[in-house]
Amino acid sequence: PNYHHQHQSGSTPWRNPLRSQGLSTRRELYERDFPVYKQPVEVGCFSLDSERRFFNDSRQMRYYVEPDRNPNFDLKDGYKDRFVKRDDGEKEKLDNILRWIVANRSKLDSRETTASSRALDVDFVTWRGHLTKLLTTPYETRDSWLLAVTRFRGTLYISEVETEAARRDRENRTERNAEMMYWGYKFEQYTCADDIHSLPDPSGVVNTNEAFCTVVQTRLADHRLLFSGEVDCRDKDPAAPAPPACYVELKTSAEICTPKQRSNLHRFKLLKWWAQSFLPGVPRIVAGFRDHEGVVVSVETFHISKISHLIKNEYNCWKPTVCMNFCSDFLSFVKHVATEDNPSVVYLFSWEPHRDVTFSIHRDSQYSFLPHWFIQEMTS
Ligand code: 0WD
Ligand code: CA
Image 1 (tube, rainbow, N blue to C red):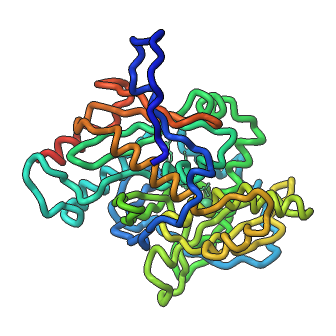
Image 2 (cartoon, protein in one colour; image 1 turned 180 degrees about the horizontal axis):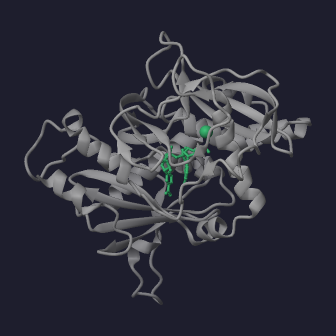
């Protein structure tokens, strides 16, 4: 494993010696064979309604309606008068996944059920989006991250903590940036219908409280994972393969006019798109390319299994194996570090570009994130 122990210099003996243990994020260290990544299996799903209420069902599922190749969708439409935006200052942490676990415990209960043993049959519980950040870390040069980890009844829960820089960016978002974030949701409205027999309704309200999330189980090397991710829509053909193979991820991106722009899409954006959809086994991405005025001028489908070939000819490009091996080694590092099984202890892992991953330990702090109702439910 790519973590090392530096000897503590005598001048700072009061420093927590564990602070000097880090995990390297250098790409070269992770260029080995692709690790085992089992086919993700959907074990359930849940929905969040227009008021962000949780439902243990698929009521928010939407159905993909293939648009014209050159559709001229106006993504600006409705931003001023038909947009209900979720309050993203309200941190939900893992709460909705934990609600799903409580409602579906019988599906997950471990066969070993003594009071001290693990309650769930998985090593890690987290959001798909947190794993995406881990996969892309060896190639990230701008954004840092903070991940809080708690070991509780043998399972490691990973929940993101917003960095100071991310909070500043969120609070000082320009009007242009806020509007561009809306464009992605508007594209979903142009391409998704509420049921298999209806058509998209672009005259309706865009409400970002609404979400349909899949819950999948898989294994990366020797790490058993349970995670959830938001899914945009599914193939409306009832004969389509079972989830997650029928799911479709929707994206918008700036229109491509030059070979250099195409190369940049491959080298930077496809890394994030690939990581996000590969993790839950979503096989395709439909991208709407828009001009500066927010009008979708063309639509293109990317098959996840073809992305690694598509990028092979790019100079100095990212490699899927580096992403997966780094994630696997990070999870090993977490297992090694987060040893105390206690819901009020948080191991806070932090990373900044060009640095190693480091950690600090916090007891009964602001970082504790497992709610009392969850601890109580899982202890009984
Ligand atoms: O509070 C937080 N810090 C976070 C909340 C961080 C990450 C996720 N979430 C919530 C989201 O609101 C949503 O309910 O978790 C769920 C999505 O989890 P995920 O699938 O693990 O997240 P990710 O893969 O990063 O994003 C998937 C989609 C996004 O699609 P695009 O195509 O833009 O990648 O979920 C949406 C968005 O549509 N999404 C959000 N929507 C509102 N607020 C947010 C957010 N903070 N993050 C992702
Ligand atoms: Ca999307």
